[in-house]
Amino acid sequence: MSSHKDVKPESESNWQQRTDIFPLDMSEEYTRYPMVTADQLRARRERPRRVKMLTRDFIEDSLYNPSYGYFSKQVVIFNPGEPFDFNNIRDEPEFHRLLGQRYTEFEDKLDKTAPNETRQLWHTPTELFNPYYGEAIARYLVANYKISGYPYEDLIIYEMGAGNGTLMVNILDYIREAEPQVYDRTKFKIIEISSSLASVQARQFRKKSDSRGHSAKVEIINKSIFDWNQRVPEPCYFLAMEVFDNFAHDAIRYDPQTEEPLQGTVLIDSKGDFYDFYNRNLDPVAARFLRVRHAATTGRYPHPLSSSKLLRSLKTRIPLMPNLSDPEYIPTRLMEFFDILAKYFPRHRLLTSDFNWLPDTIKGINAPVVQTRYQRRTVPVSTALVHQGYFDILFPTNFAAMESMYRALTGKLTRVSSHEEFLKRWAFVEETETKSGENPLLKWYQNASVMSTV
Image 1 (cartoon, rainbow, N blue to C red):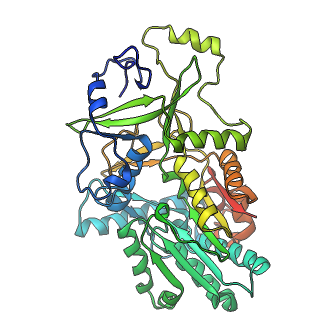
Image 2: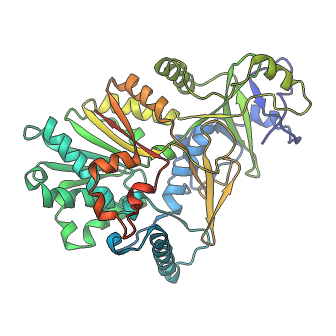
């Protein structure tokens, strides 16, 4: 929600953003309601009311609460079945048609046993390009392992947020067939916050006899990476594919005149309605993020206050103009993930892929796409303050800034490439080429980047 400065003129700590409508004044409730965190809400079975929390905690709770979170209860990851025979597909439009057909068949099958108009179904490159995408990553892992670890160290692979477990199976299948001596030294560990997805991953081994042979190689650890507290001294590879986009972010707005940052807090009233407030007292995590980012990038990153101070001052005098800048969404959870890698996985090598840009985002810098599915159609909305668990909230990643922060926090060097550049190097691209010469593996996900430790 929007609104006026706190009703107490002497207080400058809590602001409700003013817009072109006049919202309810919730200042009294803001003072009275207790502050909670996503961790404190984990044991709750029902969505909270009469509380307030930081925006990042609201997003974390919405996505990951074990009882009502999006990934815990709503998500179904599309599995197209048999791999697409790209060499016998005419062109990309035909691939698109075949994919739509398989989507319909997949969802029809689900509806026969459990009809659901609000099923949250989505796909990943691992599933669409199974097994070719996973095999490309396997080649990257094996090539780098042979240079740096083989035969003196084991090939230890951690994957965070493994979805259906398809990438794990593709990687292990490839290594077993192409590099049996490396396979003997391979261990694969999945870190999965969702209990339901952890069960799906375990079932992957029972789908076909070939996969069952991997069970001695695999460990599925059902916990959040942010609860990790065990040091891993061995060298390892850490895969985080399409994970950063669902890390919780803080909302920051800036005073147009003083340029001071204010941190977003979400208030939930007795009816379950949402209101956002902005506080000048940043919590230690957000304050540290702003410091580290500024130092690591030497101040080169997009910022809501891009216009001149004089122009901003004039705008604030226009009736009903916002009294704060547009929001900036900062990936504080991503910074904490880098901290965990540095502290508990000191010899890791990170491989991550995610979106560098997204369409249909809500308003703001680095703002997310917030969307749900209803009757098999995607429905985007214009706010992140949505009914917890029913909406995906996914953010683009500013790889230039995050690469600098990763380097600063871990002391490691990195390389960022486009999705296409990475796959041209590591995939057998002729396997995904259509009769027309078009290659969906290379041309899809043009808005994704790959970052790897070197």
